[in-house]
Image 1: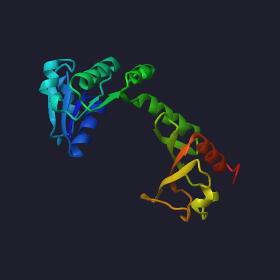
Image 2: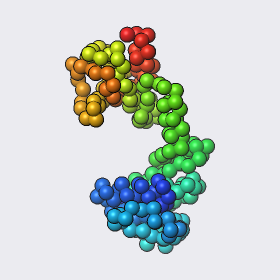
Image 3: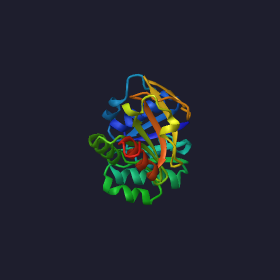
Image 4: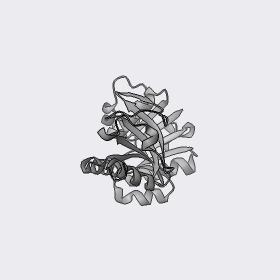
Length: 218
């Protein structure tokens, strides 16, 4: 897949390298040539220096043949405009926009972009970890109606089966990690203290799980 990454800051350089290592053809665009020094030495994608809003720069970078584009600069307006150009003018099928300022997230979302807000997600994740919540959301689907949550199996559930813990329809087991190895669990899987259990659940299901782990329904 031909992918363009607009912006070679901390996010852009890491993203470009990950895409390259995954076997994609990657082109990175940045107005500051020194930004490319953030790329790892074994990166073998293309780098293009120039203003991302320039038609000449975008076409030199190969936007006409791009399968995907990620606008990940620290400027929300710039990301939005580049994404709009990529989608509307060059018909790039997969366009992702990084949101830098959480206050502008609704604006970007209003344009119909696929938006990733690392700032808001990071703040939410830190809040959850600081609060000591036993059930932590790690992924949201749609508008958040269904989430994948991570939970640590407590001592009181050691030796019990997964079927005993997950007996409602509001949640489904996704994976279980034990001593660094993951597997697809079944209702007969015997739990051990410290297991990491990943569960797909509605908000009601998450509330039920938290109650169970807190001992309110155990």
